[in-house]
Structure formats: C-alpha cells, structure tokens
Image 1 (cartoon, rainbow, N blue to C red):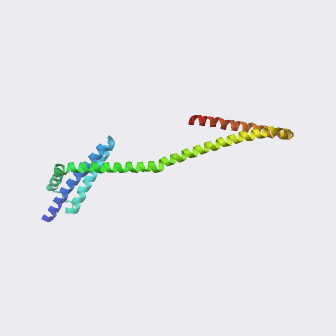
Image 2: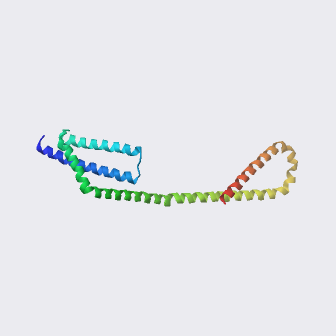
Image 3: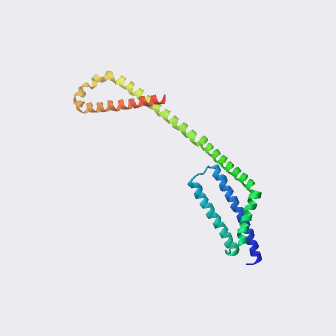
Length: 194
C-alpha cells in the first residue's frame, strides 16, 4: 500500500468517525423526542451498528481494498473524539431545529386539511341531515293532511270494501305497523337530536 493510499484511508476513516458521531447524535435526539422505549430501542441499536459496520467496511474496501490496520481504528476513534469535542452540540441543535420545523410543517398541513376539507365536509353532512329531516317532516304532514281530506269520502269506497277486504286487511295492518315503527324511530331520532 502506497503512502498516498494510506493518507486517503486515514482521511476516510476520520470522516467515517465523524459521520458515525452524527448518526449516533441523530438517533439519540430522535429517541428522546419520540420517547422510544423497549424493544424498539434494541432494534434501532442493532440497525445503527449494522449500518455503521457496513459504512466503515465499504469505505475501507473502496480506499484500500479492505486492508485492516491498527491506524484505521485510531482514525475512527479520533474522528469520533473530534466530533464530540467540537461539533456535537451544534449538530444536536441543528437536528432539533430540523425536527421542530418538520413537526410544525406537518401540523400546518393537518390544520389546512382540517380547515378546508374536514370541517366543510362535516358541515355539508349536517346540512344534508337537516334537509332530510325537513323533507321527512313535510312528507309526514302531507300524509296526515291527505288522510284527513280523504276520510269524508270513505263512504264512496264502502261497496268495494267487501270485495277487497280479504286482500286489503293484511295490507292495511302491515302498513300501519310499518308507519308505527317509522314514527317511533322518528320520535327517538328527534329526541336524540334535542
């Protein structure tokens, strides 16, 4: 391995140590922000170390075909040390700021959806329900009025009643039961509204 390749490897391992510190701080900030506990933390720890090992090994393969020497470990540890000495606080503040901006953006989008889609949809549903109630009341009143209009002419239908009685009696009884059920449901519905 040439001296130039050793310097490239050293620089890459220093930068990978810095990058490992950034990833670890990001993970710590997100873990405290979202209050991760239990098996999720263990799973993310395993994922972190797997990604870290893959990152270091891929950089090592790219820079010097995977030759592992002592100075590589020294370079990674030095990169981590330098990161935690000089950059950790600023990176943590930046990550917190980015997370808060993303949260505010998501909350803003949700408020827009609620204001311009959800609330108008609820209001339209209320209007449709009120319209249906009004139409049902109108139909009910018209039915009562039409019955009162046709009751005086009941004597006109008496001659036909004897012929139609075997078929009409069950039909009229069924209609009475049906309208009685509808009326009781309507009364319950109105009481629930009030």
